[in-house]
Amino acid sequence: MTFQQITLDLLEGLGQNLQLFLLTLVFALPLGLIITFGSMSKFAPLKYLTKTFVWIIRGSPLMLQLFVVFYVPGLVFGIPMKSRMLAATIAFVINYACYFSEIYRGGIESIPNGQYEAGQVLGLTKTQTFFRVVLMQVVKRIIAPMGNEFLTLVKDTSLARVIAVSEIIMAAERFTARGLIWPLFYTAVYFLAFCGILTLLFGWIEKKFSYYR
Amino acid sequence: MAILEVKNLHKNFGKTQVLKGIDFELEKGQVMSIIGSSGSGKTTLLRCVAQLETADSGSIKVDGSTIFDSNSSQKLTADEKMKNQLKTGLVFQSFNLFPQYNVLENVTLAMKLQAKRRADYKENKKEILAEIDLKAKALIAKMGLSDKLGNYPCELSGGQQQRVSIVRAMALEPSILFFDEPTSALDPELTGEVLKVIRELAEENMTMVIVTHEMDFAREVSDNIIFMDNGVIAESGSADDLINNPQTDRLKAFLSKIGK
Ligand SMILES: Nc1ncnc2c1ncn2[C@@H]1O[C@H](COP(=O)(O)OP(=O)(O)OP(=O)(O)O)[C@@H](O)[C@H]1O
Ligand SMILES: [Mg+2]
Image (cartoon, rainbow over all chains, first blue to last red; front, side):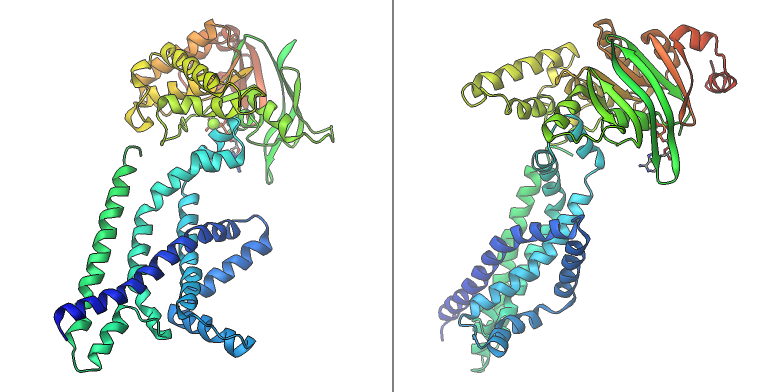
């Protein structure tokens, strides 16, 4: 069991984390916006239904949600989840979309009313005002909290091992079972590198948006 | 014929009556100032005419079109609403420029989006957009802001920002331009440059309605002044008359309170 072998094994595990990370972002970022529109809707039933859903998702452990998505289809509907990664992706997308939706909502509500009114008196439609005036300002305002969520997501992906997705910590635990403990701590290096890259990326994005206030 | 006709306009917010029957007319090319103490309903009146608020009763006519009429049950189409919206321009006290766009983009955004409705837009897109840029640049130059075309609002002084917002409103060629205390968010030394611009517009016979606390300016620039008090027009008349010979006690009290 060489150092190199262990490094490669862990890297393979990290591949699973990375896959889950990217899939979650691809689906949760747009889904979050849809949930935002739901929770900001003027149609009260939709609004409260959405808010209740967000409460349930944010109010219960992600680990539990992973179990639910993985086991409930088999137990209740007799259609067992075939892919562990699929189950993990579904749970993560729903969970993170709810968190994103609240960040979006905060961003949208922080835009002063005057921006909407300026759009209106200049003859912009509501859609034009949202996409041409408000959205870019929202993006700027949510960069920092989104950066936080992205880092949390990186580390959360390891939770997928509770439904036996063979991500990096699970890969390390296989060595632990054979009496080798240090690979478990070694995984920290991977997380730190992953998060370091994201931090740099967010720093760069923030700078890109710093030309206006 | 009057370009603006407001008849018996009422507006309540919940139980508070803010406008209690406002009547006035404005002729094309004239400038009218609205004065009055805080809370008298000046902003609310402008916002009703600029369609940011819907009045409760009465009617508003701008340039031949009925913008609001509580007696008519006719529903306006989205297209008619848009046309009505573009008949009035509004300059806000707090500018409300779009921070992510530079000066030129702030002025051209709405113009370019409007141009998309033109029948020949697809064919002549390039020419149309270039024409808009040219027109915007000319207007910006008139305001003395040519060297700021590429600057963002956060890089401008308050006075410069307000001048940009005036160009932005004018660029759409509204029939009437409304100003809600255009200088009250500015440091005293910056009000001059904005008032100068408004004065120049008045000389070009732009029809304007200005809510202001600058009495000297109001007297000099306006043809007529109306004095609002507690949701009604307490007094109105030609600019000089109204300020030099106030008839009502309320106007006398108001003028002496602000030191006139
Ligand atoms: N959206 C609103 N909801 C409830 N009340 C409002 C609203 N807007 C204005 N009012 C009330 O209407 C009254 C008139 O307000 P308005 O802003 O029109 O006064 P104003 O003459 O413009 O005053 P100022 O000189 O301070 O700008 C005030 O009593 C205000 O509290
Ligand atoms: Mg006001």
